Length: 149
Ligand code: RB5
Image (cartoon, rainbow, N blue to C red; front, top):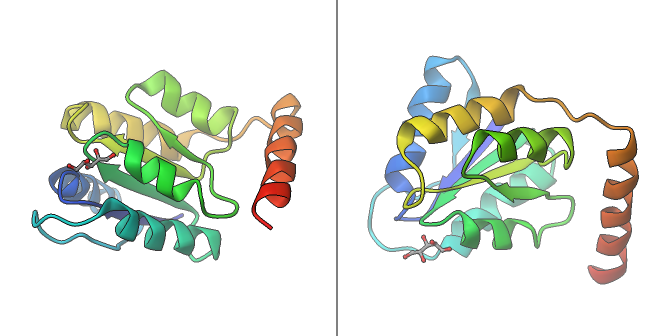
């Protein structure tokens, strides 16, 4: 599984900790930035990583900003992206099992490192359940086709 990573300045440190965790677990990941704590605009970073997932270059994405909200709003503008802001394990599991989320977003000012890493692990390990959830995702897809033409 190939993972696209990105953050703004607020998410930089947590993104680095997540990257370290993924590398230690032998996961393939690419860091789209930012690379320090100088202020940047989260849409610029979130878009590049989300677009890489959209193009199929990566299977999943993990985006970090202060709240996890700005990067989620941005990523969800990209066709085929289902970005889920998660602050707990249950939401991370449901984001995969029910929503087939392909991008996880995290708030570095919301959760601690240990929680973030547990959320990341859950997000990467949980499979989509399909079944009734597939019909709902198809409805989202139909809306995307209608609204993003
Ligand atoms: C940056 O100060 C902050 O607004 C950003 O990281 C994020 O929380 C936006 O949603």
